[in-house]
Length: 384
Ligand SMILES: *Cc1c(COP(=O)(O)O)cnc(C)c1O
Image 1 (cartoon, protein in one colour):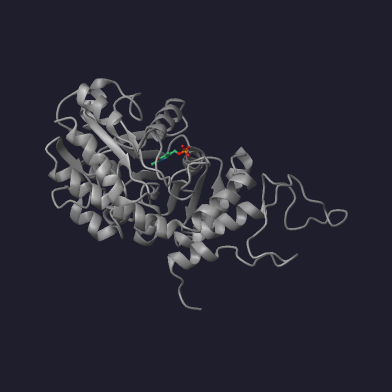
Image 2 (cartoon, protein in one colour):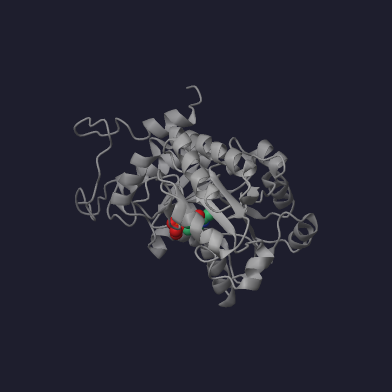
Protein backbone atom coordinates (compact mmCIF):
# COMPACT_ATOMS: atom_id res chain seq x y z
CA UNK A 1 0.00 0.00 0.00
CA UNK A 2 1.36 3.44 -0.91
CA UNK A 3 2.07 5.95 1.83
CA UNK A 4 -0.94 8.18 2.33
CA UNK A 5 -0.73 11.95 2.41
CA UNK A 6 -1.95 13.91 5.42
CA UNK A 7 -5.02 15.14 3.52
CA UNK A 8 -6.08 11.62 2.67
CA UNK A 9 -5.49 10.33 6.20
CA UNK A 10 -7.48 13.24 7.66
CA UNK A 11 -10.38 12.95 5.26
CA UNK A 12 -10.59 9.14 5.15
CA UNK A 13 -10.06 8.36 8.86
CA UNK A 14 -12.77 5.86 9.87
CA UNK A 15 -14.75 6.39 6.65
CA UNK A 16 -16.80 3.29 5.72
CA UNK A 17 -15.85 1.49 8.92
CA UNK A 18 -19.46 0.90 10.03
CA UNK A 19 -20.17 -2.83 9.96
CA UNK A 20 -23.90 -2.51 10.66
CA UNK A 21 -25.44 -0.24 8.00
CA UNK A 22 -22.39 0.72 5.91
CA UNK A 23 -22.71 4.36 7.01
CA UNK A 24 -20.02 6.31 5.19
CA UNK A 25 -19.28 8.53 8.20
CA UNK A 26 -18.58 6.54 11.39
CA UNK A 27 -21.60 6.78 13.72
CA UNK A 28 -21.32 8.22 17.20
CA UNK A 29 -21.51 5.72 20.06
CA UNK A 30 -22.82 7.54 23.12
CA UNK A 31 -23.58 4.43 25.19
CA UNK A 32 -21.61 4.39 28.43
CA UNK A 33 -21.76 0.59 28.65
CA UNK A 34 -21.72 -2.47 26.38
CA UNK A 35 -23.45 -5.82 26.90
CA UNK A 36 -21.38 -8.97 27.44
CA UNK A 37 -21.98 -11.69 24.87
CA UNK A 38 -22.55 -14.15 27.69
CA UNK A 39 -21.16 -15.16 31.06
CA UNK A 40 -17.49 -14.04 31.25
CA UNK A 41 -17.56 -13.24 27.52
CA UNK A 42 -16.55 -9.65 26.92
CA UNK A 43 -17.00 -8.05 23.47
CA UNK A 44 -14.54 -5.54 21.99
CA UNK A 45 -15.94 -2.84 24.31
CA UNK A 46 -17.34 -3.01 27.85
CA UNK A 47 -17.32 0.49 29.36
CA UNK A 48 -16.71 3.86 27.67
CA UNK A 49 -14.02 5.13 30.03
CA UNK A 50 -11.90 2.11 29.04
CA UNK A 51 -12.75 2.13 25.35
CA UNK A 52 -15.20 3.77 22.97
CA UNK A 53 -15.50 3.29 19.18
CA UNK A 54 -15.99 7.02 18.46
CA UNK A 55 -12.90 7.86 20.52
CA UNK A 56 -10.83 5.04 19.04
CA UNK A 57 -11.41 6.06 15.43
CA UNK A 58 -10.21 9.59 16.27
CA UNK A 59 -7.19 8.24 18.18
CA UNK A 60 -6.17 6.07 15.23
CA UNK A 61 -6.52 8.94 12.77
CA UNK A 62 -4.46 11.30 14.92
CA UNK A 63 -1.77 8.65 15.47
CA UNK A 64 -1.55 8.11 11.72
CA UNK A 65 -1.26 11.87 11.09
CA UNK A 66 1.65 12.11 13.55
CA UNK A 67 3.22 8.83 12.32
CA UNK A 68 2.91 7.30 15.78
CA UNK A 69 2.02 3.74 16.78
CA UNK A 70 -0.54 4.57 19.44
CA UNK A 71 -2.95 7.46 20.00
CA UNK A 72 -4.85 8.30 23.19
CA UNK A 73 -7.69 10.84 23.24
CA UNK A 74 -8.05 12.76 26.48
CA UNK A 75 -10.54 15.15 28.06
CA UNK A 76 -8.30 18.21 27.55
CA UNK A 77 -4.85 19.19 26.35
CA UNK A 78 -3.89 19.61 29.99
CA UNK A 79 -4.93 16.05 30.84
CA UNK A 80 -2.84 14.77 27.91
CA UNK A 81 0.15 16.62 29.41
CA UNK A 82 -0.64 15.21 32.87
CA UNK A 83 -0.82 11.75 31.31
CA UNK A 84 2.69 12.02 29.86
CA UNK A 85 3.98 12.75 33.39
CA UNK A 86 2.88 9.26 34.49
CA UNK A 87 6.25 7.94 33.22
CA UNK A 88 7.89 9.79 36.15
CA UNK A 89 8.66 8.49 39.63
CA UNK A 90 9.70 10.66 42.61
CA UNK A 91 13.45 10.37 41.89
CA UNK A 92 13.10 11.07 38.17
CA UNK A 93 14.03 14.44 36.68
CA UNK A 94 11.74 16.35 34.32
CA UNK A 95 13.30 19.16 32.25
CA UNK A 96 10.95 21.85 30.91
CA UNK A 97 11.36 25.12 29.00
CA UNK A 98 11.01 28.40 30.89
CA UNK A 99 8.60 29.71 28.25
CA UNK A 100 6.14 26.80 27.96
CA UNK A 101 2.35 27.13 28.00
CA UNK A 102 1.26 28.68 31.31
CA UNK A 103 -1.04 25.81 32.27
CA UNK A 104 1.75 23.28 31.62
CA UNK A 105 4.13 25.32 33.75
CA UNK A 106 1.59 25.45 36.61
CA UNK A 107 1.10 21.68 36.41
CA UNK A 108 4.85 20.90 36.34
CA UNK A 109 5.70 23.22 39.24
CA UNK A 110 2.85 22.14 41.50
CA UNK A 111 3.31 18.40 40.98
CA UNK A 112 7.06 18.74 41.52
CA UNK A 113 6.32 20.73 44.68
CA UNK A 114 4.39 17.70 45.99
CA UNK A 115 7.37 15.47 45.35
CA UNK A 116 5.94 13.57 42.38
CA UNK A 117 9.16 14.16 40.39
CA UNK A 118 12.18 16.49 40.28
CA UNK A 119 11.99 19.53 38.03
CA UNK A 120 14.50 21.67 36.17
CA UNK A 121 13.34 24.75 34.25
CA UNK A 122 15.76 25.89 31.54
CA UNK A 123 16.11 27.96 28.39
CA UNK A 124 16.21 25.20 25.77
CA UNK A 125 17.66 27.47 23.10
CA UNK A 126 20.85 27.79 25.20
CA UNK A 127 23.24 24.85 24.51
CA UNK A 128 25.07 25.36 27.85
CA UNK A 129 21.82 24.96 29.80
CA UNK A 130 20.95 21.87 27.75
CA UNK A 131 24.40 20.37 28.47
CA UNK A 132 23.92 20.92 32.20
CA UNK A 133 20.40 19.49 32.17
CA UNK A 134 21.29 16.34 30.20
CA UNK A 135 24.31 15.73 32.45
CA UNK A 136 21.76 14.95 35.16
CA UNK A 137 20.22 12.18 33.02
CA UNK A 138 16.60 13.35 33.04
CA UNK A 139 13.86 10.78 32.58
CA UNK A 140 11.76 13.15 30.44
CA UNK A 141 12.34 16.43 28.60
CA UNK A 142 9.36 18.59 27.65
CA UNK A 143 9.62 20.66 24.47
CA UNK A 144 7.26 23.24 23.04
CA UNK A 145 8.24 24.77 19.72
CA UNK A 146 7.36 27.39 18.55
CA UNK A 147 6.88 28.96 21.98
CA UNK A 148 4.00 31.16 23.04
CA UNK A 149 3.69 34.10 22.41
CA UNK A 150 7.12 34.99 20.94
CA UNK A 151 7.41 31.94 18.65
CA UNK A 152 10.94 31.02 19.74
CA UNK A 153 12.14 27.87 17.96
CA UNK A 154 13.83 24.93 19.73
CA UNK A 155 16.01 22.48 17.79
CA UNK A 156 14.07 19.20 17.98
CA UNK A 157 16.68 17.00 16.28
CA UNK A 158 19.46 18.25 18.54
CA UNK A 159 17.37 17.62 21.68
CA UNK A 160 16.37 14.14 20.46
CA UNK A 161 20.02 13.25 19.78
CA UNK A 162 21.11 14.43 23.22
CA UNK A 163 18.16 12.55 24.75
CA UNK A 164 19.14 9.29 23.07
CA UNK A 165 22.62 9.49 24.59
CA UNK A 166 21.22 9.88 28.11
CA UNK A 167 18.18 7.57 27.69
CA UNK A 168 15.79 10.46 28.16
CA UNK A 169 12.26 10.42 26.75
CA UNK A 170 11.30 13.43 24.62
CA UNK A 171 7.74 14.82 24.71
CA UNK A 172 6.72 17.63 22.34
CA UNK A 173 3.65 19.85 22.67
CA UNK A 174 2.77 20.22 18.97
CA UNK A 175 -0.42 22.27 19.47
CA UNK A 176 0.78 25.38 17.60
CA UNK A 177 2.02 23.45 14.58
CA UNK A 178 -0.28 20.45 14.06
CA UNK A 179 1.12 17.51 12.04
CA UNK A 180 0.63 19.66 8.94
CA UNK A 181 3.53 21.93 9.95
CA UNK A 182 5.68 19.68 12.16
CA UNK A 183 5.92 15.97 12.96
CA UNK A 184 8.16 15.54 16.01
CA UNK A 185 7.99 11.71 16.06
CA UNK A 186 9.74 11.66 12.66
CA UNK A 187 12.53 13.80 14.17
CA UNK A 188 13.18 11.40 17.05
CA UNK A 189 10.64 12.36 19.75
CA UNK A 190 8.87 9.66 21.78
CA UNK A 191 5.64 11.45 22.67
CA UNK A 192 3.57 14.16 20.99
CA UNK A 193 0.71 15.93 22.76
CA UNK A 194 -1.88 18.35 21.45
CA UNK A 195 -4.54 20.51 22.89
CA UNK A 196 -6.98 19.39 20.19
CA UNK A 197 -9.11 22.29 21.47
CA UNK A 198 -7.02 24.38 19.08
CA UNK A 199 -6.23 23.65 15.41
CA UNK A 200 -6.99 19.92 15.40
CA UNK A 201 -10.68 20.42 16.17
CA UNK A 202 -10.39 23.91 14.77
CA UNK A 203 -13.89 25.22 15.42
CA UNK A 204 -13.60 26.51 19.01
CA UNK A 205 -16.40 24.23 20.22
CA UNK A 206 -14.53 21.39 21.98
CA UNK A 207 -12.01 21.23 24.84
CA UNK A 208 -9.97 18.04 24.39
CA UNK A 209 -6.49 16.62 23.94
CA UNK A 210 -4.42 13.79 22.58
CA UNK A 211 -1.18 11.97 23.35
CA UNK A 212 0.55 9.96 20.63
CA UNK A 213 3.55 7.70 21.11
CA UNK A 214 6.22 6.46 18.75
CA UNK A 215 6.18 2.95 20.20
CA UNK A 216 3.30 0.61 20.86
CA UNK A 217 4.69 -0.32 24.30
CA UNK A 218 4.79 3.23 25.66
CA UNK A 219 1.36 3.87 24.12
CA UNK A 220 -0.14 0.86 25.86
CA UNK A 221 1.43 1.83 29.18
CA UNK A 222 -0.01 5.35 28.97
CA UNK A 223 -3.40 4.13 27.69
CA UNK A 224 -3.56 1.99 30.84
CA UNK A 225 -2.91 5.11 32.92
CA UNK A 226 -5.47 7.19 30.98
CA UNK A 227 -8.14 4.68 31.94
CA UNK A 228 -6.80 4.27 35.47
CA UNK A 229 -6.89 8.03 36.17
CA UNK A 230 -10.12 8.44 34.19
CA UNK A 231 -9.11 11.18 31.75
CA UNK A 232 -10.19 9.63 28.44
CA UNK A 233 -12.14 11.94 26.10
CA UNK A 234 -15.91 11.87 25.62
CA UNK A 235 -17.58 10.21 22.62
CA UNK A 236 -19.34 13.41 21.60
CA UNK A 237 -16.17 15.52 21.73
CA UNK A 238 -14.34 12.81 19.77
CA UNK A 239 -17.03 12.81 17.11
CA UNK A 240 -16.85 16.58 16.72
CA UNK A 241 -13.06 16.56 16.71
CA UNK A 242 -12.87 13.95 13.93
CA UNK A 243 -15.29 16.11 11.96
CA UNK A 244 -12.87 19.02 12.45
CA UNK A 245 -9.86 16.89 11.47
CA UNK A 246 -11.36 16.23 8.02
CA UNK A 247 -10.51 19.80 7.00
CA UNK A 248 -7.26 20.19 8.94
CA UNK A 249 -5.01 20.37 5.88
CA UNK A 250 -6.95 22.99 3.86
CA UNK A 251 -7.63 24.96 7.05
CA UNK A 252 -3.93 25.11 7.90
CA UNK A 253 -3.15 26.21 4.34
CA UNK A 254 -5.62 29.10 4.56
CA UNK A 255 -4.59 30.02 8.14
CA UNK A 256 -0.96 30.27 7.00
CA UNK A 257 -1.70 32.18 3.79
CA UNK A 258 -3.65 34.74 5.79
CA UNK A 259 -0.92 34.93 8.45
CA UNK A 260 1.72 35.56 5.75
CA UNK A 261 -0.35 38.47 4.37
CA UNK A 262 -0.69 39.98 7.84
CA UNK A 263 3.05 39.60 8.51
CA UNK A 264 3.73 41.54 5.28
CA UNK A 265 1.46 44.36 6.44
CA UNK A 266 2.78 44.46 10.02
CA UNK A 267 6.50 44.61 9.15
CA UNK A 268 5.84 47.61 6.87
CA UNK A 269 3.52 49.57 9.15
CA UNK A 270 4.74 52.60 11.12
CA UNK A 271 2.53 51.82 14.13
CA UNK A 272 4.37 48.51 14.69
CA UNK A 273 7.64 48.24 16.60
CA UNK A 274 8.56 44.60 15.91
CA UNK A 275 6.92 41.47 14.48
CA UNK A 276 7.52 37.92 15.76
CA UNK A 277 6.95 35.19 13.19
CA UNK A 278 9.33 32.36 12.18
CA UNK A 279 8.80 33.18 8.47
CA UNK A 280 10.82 36.40 8.90
CA UNK A 281 14.54 36.10 8.04
CA UNK A 282 15.16 38.46 11.00
CA UNK A 283 13.58 35.92 13.40
CA UNK A 284 16.38 34.12 15.32
CA UNK A 285 14.71 30.73 14.70
CA UNK A 286 14.03 31.26 10.99
CA UNK A 287 16.61 28.79 9.60
CA UNK A 288 15.73 26.17 12.21
CA UNK A 289 12.02 26.56 11.48
CA UNK A 290 12.74 26.09 7.76
CA UNK A 291 14.65 22.91 8.51
CA UNK A 292 12.30 21.19 10.97
CA UNK A 293 8.88 22.60 10.05
CA UNK A 294 6.82 22.14 6.91
CA UNK A 295 5.07 25.48 7.47
CA UNK A 296 5.60 28.60 9.55
CA UNK A 297 2.22 28.41 11.28
CA UNK A 298 -0.50 30.99 11.73
CA UNK A 299 0.22 32.33 15.21
CA UNK A 300 2.03 35.64 15.23
CA UNK A 301 2.77 38.41 17.70
CA UNK A 302 3.96 41.99 17.44
CA UNK A 303 4.66 45.04 19.57
CA UNK A 304 2.82 48.27 18.92
CA UNK A 305 4.63 51.58 19.27
CA UNK A 306 3.30 53.47 22.27
CA UNK A 307 1.53 52.24 25.39
CA UNK A 308 -1.81 51.19 26.76
CA UNK A 309 -3.76 53.88 24.91
CA UNK A 310 -2.52 52.57 21.56
CA UNK A 311 -3.21 48.97 22.59
CA UNK A 312 -6.79 49.76 23.60
CA UNK A 313 -7.48 51.85 20.52
CA UNK A 314 -6.00 49.20 18.25
CA UNK A 315 -8.16 46.45 19.76
CA UNK A 316 -11.28 48.62 19.57
CA UNK A 317 -10.48 49.49 15.95
CA UNK A 318 -10.55 45.84 14.81
CA UNK A 319 -13.76 44.52 13.31
CA UNK A 320 -12.94 40.94 12.26
CA UNK A 321 -10.86 39.86 15.32
CA UNK A 322 -12.48 38.77 18.59
CA UNK A 323 -10.67 39.74 21.77
CA UNK A 324 -10.27 36.27 23.29
CA UNK A 325 -7.82 33.70 24.61
CA UNK A 326 -7.32 30.32 22.94
CA UNK A 327 -6.34 29.86 19.29
CA UNK A 328 -6.61 27.67 16.23
CA UNK A 329 -10.29 28.18 15.40
CA UNK A 330 -11.62 29.25 12.01
CA UNK A 331 -12.25 32.77 13.37
CA UNK A 332 -9.48 35.30 13.92
CA UNK A 333 -8.65 36.23 17.52
CA UNK A 334 -6.60 39.01 19.03
CA UNK A 335 -5.06 38.61 22.47
CA UNK A 336 -3.14 40.94 24.78
CA UNK A 337 -0.81 38.42 26.52
CA UNK A 338 0.18 40.72 29.42
CA UNK A 339 -3.41 41.02 30.69
CA UNK A 340 -4.84 37.77 29.30
CA UNK A 341 -2.94 34.52 28.60
CA UNK A 342 0.13 35.52 30.62
CA UNK A 343 -1.58 37.54 33.37
CA UNK A 344 -0.59 34.93 36.00
CA UNK A 345 3.05 36.01 35.55
CA UNK A 346 4.05 39.09 37.56
CA UNK A 347 5.50 42.11 35.73
CA UNK A 348 9.08 41.01 36.42
CA UNK A 349 8.49 37.49 35.10
CA UNK A 350 6.78 38.95 32.05
CA UNK A 351 9.76 41.23 31.41
CA UNK A 352 12.17 38.25 31.70
CA UNK A 353 10.03 36.29 29.24
CA UNK A 354 10.03 39.28 26.84
CA UNK A 355 6.29 39.91 27.16
CA UNK A 356 5.96 43.69 26.94
CA UNK A 357 2.76 45.64 27.73
CA UNK A 358 2.53 46.58 24.03
CA UNK A 359 2.71 42.97 22.79
CA UNK A 360 -0.28 41.69 20.81
CA UNK A 361 -0.95 38.14 19.60
CA UNK A 362 -3.05 37.05 16.64
CA UNK A 363 -4.55 33.65 16.03
CA UNK A 364 -5.14 34.20 12.33
CA UNK A 365 -8.37 32.64 11.10
CA UNK A 366 -9.51 31.46 7.69
CA UNK A 367 -11.65 34.45 6.71
CA UNK A 368 -10.80 36.28 3.50
CA UNK A 369 -7.13 37.24 3.87
CA UNK A 370 -7.38 40.60 2.09
CA UNK A 371 -10.31 41.60 4.27
CA UNK A 372 -8.28 40.75 7.39
CA UNK A 373 -5.38 42.84 6.09
CA UNK A 374 -7.69 45.80 5.39
CA UNK A 375 -9.17 45.49 8.87
CA UNK A 376 -5.79 45.45 10.64
CA UNK A 377 -4.48 48.28 8.44
CA UNK A 378 -7.45 50.45 9.37
CA UNK A 379 -6.94 49.79 13.10
CA UNK A 380 -3.19 50.51 12.83
CA UNK A 381 -3.67 53.67 10.74
CA UNK A 382 -5.97 55.02 13.44
CA UNK A 383 -3.32 54.87 16.18
CA UNK A 384 -0.48 56.79 14.51
C1 LIG B 1 -4.30 25.41 25.09
C2 LIG B 1 -2.98 24.76 25.22
C3 LIG B 1 -2.76 23.74 26.16
C4 LIG B 1 -3.82 23.29 27.13
O1 LIG B 1 -4.87 22.64 26.49
P1 LIG B 1 -6.38 22.61 27.07
O2 LIG B 1 -7.13 21.89 25.99
O3 LIG B 1 -6.81 24.03 27.25
O4 LIG B 1 -6.35 21.88 28.35
C5 LIG B 1 -1.50 23.15 26.18
N1 LIG B 1 -0.51 23.54 25.37
C6 LIG B 1 -0.68 24.55 24.47
C7 LIG B 1 0.46 24.94 23.58
C8 LIG B 1 -1.90 25.19 24.36
O5 LIG B 1 -2.05 26.19 23.49
